Length: 452
Image (tube, rainbow, N blue to C red; front, side, top):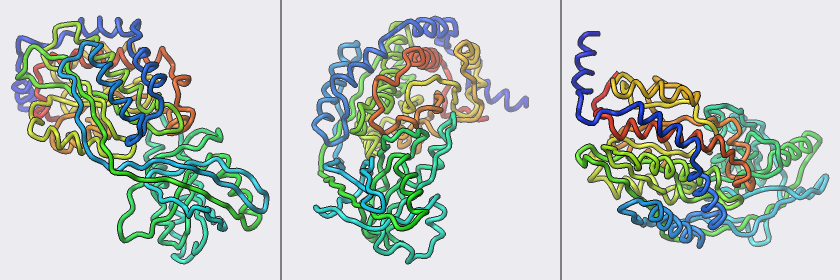
């Protein structure tokens, strides 16, 4: 223990710019009465709306991001373009044709191939889990439509999503079993009829690509009930197209007083799926981090605070592009984090291993306690998909854990709109981020050197 304390003492050697918990507490309280985040969120969802990468709205969102950061006083506001192949939705429809005709609520999955122009009709084979499909005979579904009707578990941490989302990318498995199309129960904790879209993994050249879509939860259950009685026939029309395009990540800084101390990189992703207006996924993350950075920037701070609006998270590309663009300056990024789980209460903070032992970070636990936020000693594993590239390259990360209990009721659906944002919870997020940023921006800790 004495050796460990000595090592930590060297890592946490005092500097003239130690973090100030009193300042962090003042910013916390100020954030609870600040509506900058709401204004940013309302602006993006109202003025731009849905903004899939590759769409005309994505370019509008790019211009919105530059204008918003500039108006809020950020410096070095710039756009980082990167090439990608965009998947975009066209006409879609589905219906049960027999035994009991019914229109279906569905959304095509990202990276799906289209049906023939006239659509396709086939019998549905229902599996109540992905594991059941994996265990089925290879020839079980030749010429049929496979439906995996696996429900999702509601959890605070989002682990239920991690367990369920693999079913969204099971079209290649259905294809290997002979299927002509693939349907999946929406990866959702809601029982509303609105379907939830999302990307499946890209097809490999060796795989036979088939159309794939997500069904609203009641419609998936309806097909399962009918199939228990006898054969169910479904007609699908799924049209989509892909195009080579440009996506854009937008970035802006609040410079710190000590350039050698490096930058804190935070933000959310600017793109969204098309059914709703992308309020919780992820206009909220942009609004929270922008508002928190603005509050901290009004006080003296040692490290530069950089807010990034990543340009293509939903269909991929942002993380790799950001790593490629900044590979020569990774050493100057002190720590990074992303807000991408809506706007409900933050309940925990995870830091790099050993960081909570730093004498100028330890007081943050008391600063966050009035917000009902726990200091979680387990080191950060997942700080957000847009920072996973730089994380894998050695950049330390932190995570403010949000309550995901209701997030997947609305995620990737037409209900992802401003109406489901709770302003009080949004302000609590900003307070958590502002207090945390204040400490991280001023601490003398080198997060690459701390160890448990």
